Image (cartoon, rainbow, N blue to C red):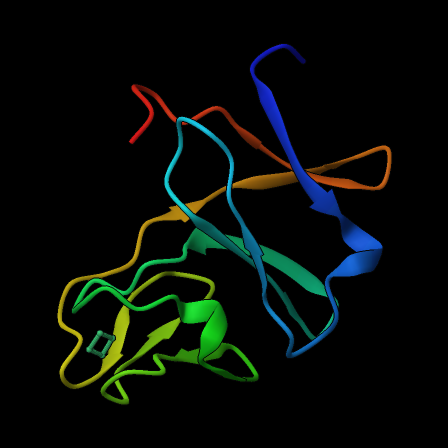
Length: 108
Ligand code: FES
């Protein structure tokens, strides 16, 4: 348990409304609810300095607010130009109603 990081409560992540998580020592994260399934990715777009949680979630796709690129939330794969580099994704678990991930190795 000591190696787990609790990010937010599952109940606070609504379908289609990604939640931004800022914790010291790790990258900014985004937590998504896709039709009841929770996913965690890096929040910063791989194309520029945009927070994906400021973008638009369409089902399992998150669209960046800056240039309209997009990613597959489940896999992190880049789905639309100009995004080419995949987003980092984090396997998550639910602990006592919280979304938790393993502490990323080496932090940022
Ligand atoms: S910064 Fe995200 S598409 Fe350009």
